[in-house]
Length: 293
Image (cartoon, rainbow, N blue to C red; front, side, top):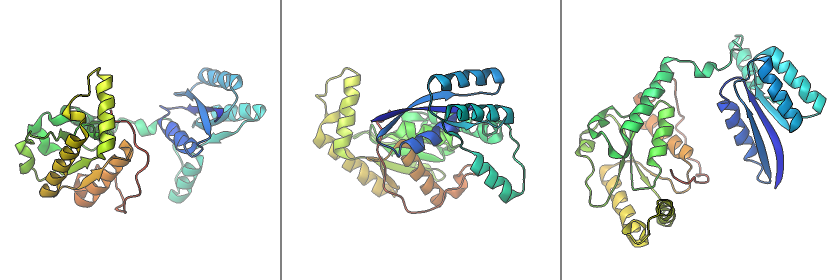
């Protein structure tokens, strides 16, 4: 495994450049980046710290700075050290400017402005937390999406991710022998999606969860035969109700959320947040899974 220093410099939160960098570095399995985060860099003094850090640990620099003076100084420093310095958003911004016939505003952090869409996301986040794990069933009629699934199928983190996209998502656990909230049968607005998972993978995750809680595994919660029956019961319920089903076995939370949004855009396009559109294309094979929270 080859290790290298990677400096990520941003004049905002660094969310964009972090995502871009990880998307790129993930394509090189034999290389391991040592990431140095430099966020909210907007003054000469703050850039001094960045330059000192780069000199101390030379390595590739990726940046999203809009201030011309700071950009030039960072690029000059990298030229002196003989290391790449990449303005990751420049090609996209330049292409947009040419296509729209407009000039970029060159203001840092504009994607985090306190707009109506921002407050919609905050509202959706509150909704997800207040309607987690079957709570506040009386308010489910306000949901855009409701996820139903057995324990450890990533219901909560998927709802939180959807909330960050402005989608009000609630989740309800399927527990054998326990009826689902009767409110579900009265709903017409929300999209209800059933989540399922491979039994062996589910047992492994549940056992790991019990170990973290210092509990023994002599329980039907991790009994392979009982888990298979539980999944079959849940699957029969989804079919009976006519709910779409997503197998999250080999899906990351992001991939599951993307599939939910795809279904939502096809079946309930009016529930999609303003300005968000998802093309209705066939699903791609799922990628590597994450450990569920």
